[in-house]
Length: 336
Ligand code: KG4
Image (cartoon, rainbow, N blue to C red; front, side, top):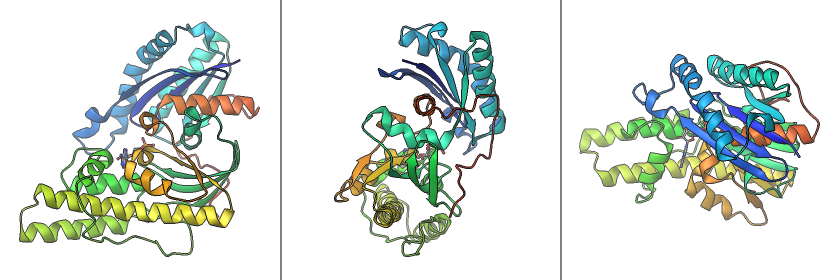
């Protein structure tokens, strides 16, 4: 039995978790810096690093307390080594390695995207490779074949804006708070897809994504409506529903193609956008495919996904002990 401490500090969430190889997730603590960055409409790297420094130790203490454990019970420390913001990553790496040295325990550097990919295991341990992963977050839209832990092939990637970015930038045009994905989704609930926005690359032969054209279409639509009438709540709801439908149609179509082409019957949907309930409802209609999602509160960045990825690496004896951060770490092998 191993107790893994997971540490996530790649961007604007300080996430800590304790994962037990036999009993699963024992506790997790999270501090989101959203309020700190909201004023700027995006993450300010220096502010992010300083805030991680302020939060990380109290969050580790709270996490241990919640699980009724002490630091001496920890067997391994897993931390996000990349990709992410350099300064923010260094805070997590520094604390992980310092603590490991003091306790005489090993550390495992984890790829942030591997954490997302394995996050559905937190609620369904029956998930076993091979599976297709649709990874949709603020910075990534990727379709990946997961043959085994550490054996990944990227089939499709974002050429410009990621799915979460498309939600966030569109939400901003509707004067919604940052990050706007959840607010836009809430607004869309009472709206209708009446504007029929473009579905970028829906019929392209490959599995890549491109959402920057959609953003331009939203700008043009909003400006046109504003020049003719006031942007009422009803209009905003319909615009939100139209944006959401356009993004989801593309995600569902590409995931379906990947499943057909690979003849794999399991799909993992992960990353912040996997919290979108309309996306989940649409994917759930796929016949003959078993779909795995992370728990709703663990779709965005958190320490639990890093802890479980550390545990999986440990069990498959694929560990790479040592101090490192890789702000531009690719989930190798390269895209095909
Ligand atoms: O995984 P995550 O924390 O980011 C990265 O690691 O990059 O995901 C954050 C993204 C944001 O773009 C946010 O707007 C989006 O996930 N998001 C959503 C929803 N909840 C979060 N997008 C659509 N619908 C949601 N319910």
